[in-house]
Structures are given as C-alpha cells and as structure tokens.
Image (cartoon, rainbow, N blue to C red):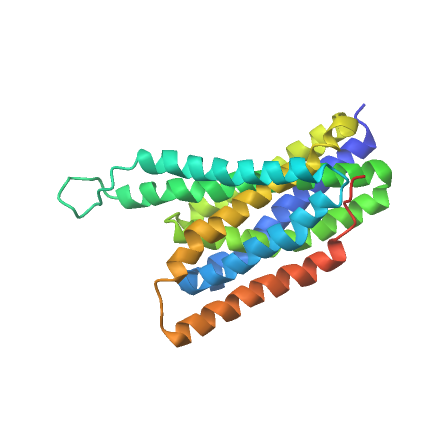
Length: 265
C-alpha cells in the first residue's frame, strides 16, 4: 500500500506545477502574447527577481557552504554560456529568405534552440520546488499544503515570463504550452525523489536552486536585455523600465509571504 504522505506529495507537486502552468498560460497566451516584445521587459524583471530575491536567498540561508554555492553559480553561468555556444555553433546562420533554399520554419527551429535554455532552468527550478514540497509534507502535512499553495502562487509570474521568452524565441503557442507543461512534471519527480531520499536530497536543494537561478540570470542578461537595448527611444525605454519594475514587484510581493515555508536546514 502506498504511503498517504507520498500520495499527498505527488498530488501537491502535480497540482502546484500544472496549476501554475494553466494560470500562466491563461494570461500569457491570451492577453500577453499579443504584445510579446514589450513583455520581454516584464520577463527580465520576473526572472531576475525570482533568482536574486527568492531562489538565491533561499539557497544561501539553507546553511550550505557559501563558497560552494558561488562556485555552482559560476559553473552554471559558464555552463549555460557553453550550451548556447554549442547550439549557435550548429547554426548555419542562414535564413529562409537568403537564397539557400531553407525549408519553411527554418528560422523558428533555429530560434527554438536558444529557447530551450529557459526550459532547462525551469525544470531545475521545478525539481527543487518538488523537493521543498516533499520536505514540508514530511515535517507536517498542513505545512506541506501551505508550501504547495505558496509555490504555485509565486510560480505563476515566473511561468508567464517563461512563456513570453519562448514565444519571443519563435515557439508556437501550443509548443510553448506543451514544453512548459512537460517541465512542470519535474516538480513531481523532485517530490518523489525528495520523499525517497530525503536525508541526502536536503543537502542538494540549495545547489539545484543556484543552478536554476544561474539560468534565469544568464537568459535575462545575455539574451533579453540586449534585445531591449535596440530600442533607444525615451518613451519605449520608460515603458521597458516600468515593466521590469512591475515584474520585480510582483515576484517580491508573492514570494515575501512564501519565503520561509520551504526552508531546509
């Protein structure tokens, strides 16, 4: 017979992951997909705030060695740079209309490779969330429910940010939704592994969170921000800054209440 705690963990991680994806899809695939370019600024605010105001503080407050965490952050940033470099090296740097006879959709496929980086980071983040939910349920089922709800709430703006990044990278709406839904299942995997190997996994969580954060920072700084620099007009710059601030404030408000529920010491 399956342990009721394990069933609760699996149900909570699935609902937290899928629930946040559905809520984010409702927002980003209806209202926000019509204005993808301006919403890239919002994504920058969300990704940086998720990494710097939530995930990294959570990791460093866990009691893990700070030097090892910074080394992981450095390795993550360089690793994502190399991943993108490898993807770019495979690019032909030719486009559909350049006379080289590329098939329809070639540009979208090429752009999609860089979009995959956000999915890697998102999967790591969801995996860590699953472990945190498992830890909370093992401690107290009531804390587990609160933690799952808190994680679902603060995931919504991040998932919206991810959708916008994927749409901006050339993904179709259906493909962006499918890939995000798939990455959310890593929360269930994290919950299962967290339950089965709790003692050992507790020490890994901070490092997984730092790796996920490194992907969010890298994508925001190396991919999204340079796109925003191409629009030097004051009015557009003001809108960009306002949307970045909106993304940061939204994550801050939602994670301020969630912060602390999923601590692992």
